[in-house]
Length: 344
Ligand SMILES: Cc1ncc(COP(=O)(O)O)c(C=O)c1O
Image 1 (cartoon, rainbow, N blue to C red):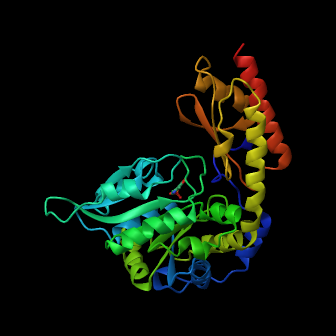
Image 2: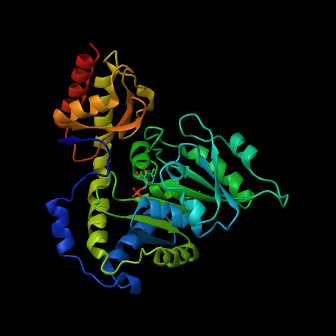
Image 3: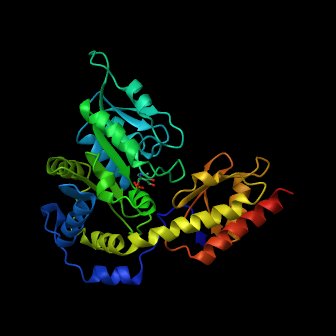
């Protein structure tokens, strides 16, 4: 089965498991797991921040990053298709007790003018604008890379207005690999960053929050509060460390495969796809309305390919390092053949 529903479906390799077998473990609630500590220090260094904290998921990373700084009644700005808004179960209402305000954008890149219009003035009846979130790369905008100049422009404005910046960097690595901009440079404008290791990087579990020592200490407290304090967490942190050190450089190939796949689909007259939007490891495409999505997916499954639905007759394919060049060609050609058949 060629599973390109997500880059979260990668499986641990034997090398990864052997690496874990040789790691040292301890109780991470006492901060005594050497492997967790190594992963945290390594990531903090990589992102150019004072400290980092291992958490169980990207959702926990984002939500704790918001909760440590937002207060009840605050407002947090997000792009309107952001994961934080779309897929995190409305968690800010529960954890930060803050409201999200969505900013419209073309292709996921919020414009400073739109942000300026959304910033609250000081009247006491308004919520206080507390945090601006930027998702890089942007999932629902097809793996869009957010340009660093756009981020710096927004961050300069935000910081001069006492507003914090958070990066949902679940796939920050892809932006770095594609642009050549270092993780440090991409993270510099942010107060807090959440990065995922269980996506393209290929770890089975785990994300990290990075920021100032003070923020990370608060996040540690919050992590415990939501039941995320784990004991010998080095078992998973070790796999994550292995993945981060070894798989980072494999991401460029996933971008190449996404383009190869997109090119195949693009040549089919019944498939809509914007080639300009294929920047990293994701491809979004649509099929004719007369074909039922369920039928397309079940027929595709029978032919050993899986993609994920993201809207009416729209789908997403995500490339990861466990999809080979041959798999990529097979998946693309199979989809085109199937659509040609179903459209008759
Ligand atoms: C951009 C983005 N942020 C955060 C997350 C949340 O990660 P998790 O599924 O580990 O909670 C995802 C998951 O796909 C994502 O795509």
